[in-house]
Length: 432
Image (cartoon, rainbow, N blue to C red; front, side):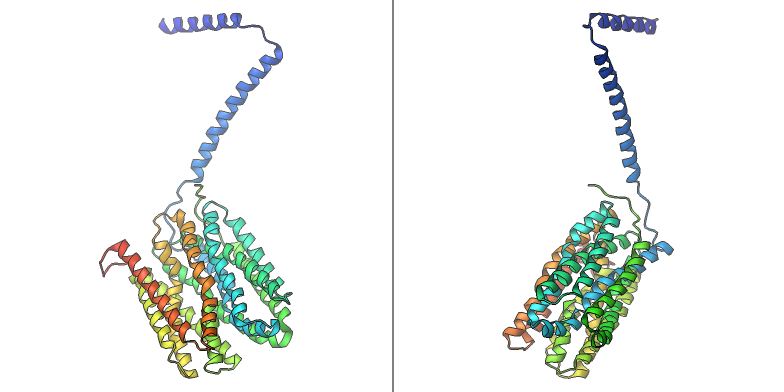
C-alpha cells in the first residue's frame, strides 16, 4: 500500500509540474532530451573509461625470471648496447684521424665524444619515464632513426661543426632514447637472475668495442672515411632491425667510454706504440670486458648481489688508476689493461642491476634508472675534456689526469659504500 501511494503521489507531482511549467517550443524539448541522452552516454563512457583504466593497470604478476621471451630481451639489450656503447668505444680509433683531417686539437675533438656520452645519459631521465608511461615503441623507433641519421651524416662531415652536430648531438640523442629504455625493459623480466640478464646486455659494450674498431682499422685505409662510416651505418641498421622486431615490454603503462680513448693516446704518446698497437690495446681491453661483465653478473645473482660485487671493483679500479702512472713499457701496459679491464667491466656491467636493486616497484625502474643516468651524464660530459686539459697543462704528461681519475673513482666507491650502509646498516655478511 505504501509503495502504491508513493507512486501515485510521484505521478501527481510530475503531472502538476508539467502543467505549471511555461510552454516550450518543440526545439527546446528536443534540446532537453538531447542533453539527457548525452548525459547518460557520458556516464557510460566515464564508467567504461574507468573500467579500461583499471584493466590497463592490472599487475601481470611477478617477473618470469627466465624463458625464451625473457632471455630474448636480454639478447636484444646486448645488441642495443652493441650499437650504442660499442660505437662510442670506437671513438678513440677516429680521434687521430679527426685531429689530422680537421686540423683540430685533441681536446676539441674529445668534446664530440663527451657530448655524445653526456646526451646518452642525460636523456635517460626523460626516455626512462616515457618508457614507464607506455611510450617504449615510439621512443625506441625515434632513437633508432636519430642514431642512424647521425651515423650517415657523419660520413658527409668535412668540418668540425658538422662532426659535432652529427656524431655528437644527433647520435648522442639517439643513443639516449635507446639505452635506458632497453635496460629498463630487461629489468622487468627478471628478479633473481636480473644481474646476469643485465650483464649479458652490458657485455654488448665489449663486443661492439671489439667489432667497431676492427672494422674501422680494416676499412679506413682501403675505402676512406666516408664509406667506412656508411659501412658502420649499414651494420647498425641490420642490428637495429632485429631489436625493433623482437624487443617487447612486459608491464602496463604507469601514468602518473672516453677513458679507452685516453689509454690509447697514452700508449702512443708515452709508451710510443704504433697506431695499430694502440688499436689492439683497445680491442684487448674490450675483449676482457666481455667476460668481465658476464661472470660478475652470474656471481652477483648466485652469491653476492650487485652492490657487494661493485664496491670492491670500484676500489680496485681506483687503485689501478694510481698504478697506471708507474707504467713505462708495452708489456706492462698490456698486462695492466687486462687487469683493469676486468675490474672496470665488473663495475660497469652491474651498474644497471645495482640501480634496479634499489627500486622495489618495477614500474618505476625506467624513471629511477634515468634519474641516475642523468646525474652520471655530467661527469661523462666534463671528464674527457678535463683530462685533456690536465694533460695539456702538464706539457703532455699524464700524471695529473691519472691521479684525478683514481681519486674520483675512490670517492665514488665511498659513496657506494654509504648507499649500501643506508640500505642494510653496518652488517657485513648480507646479500645486496
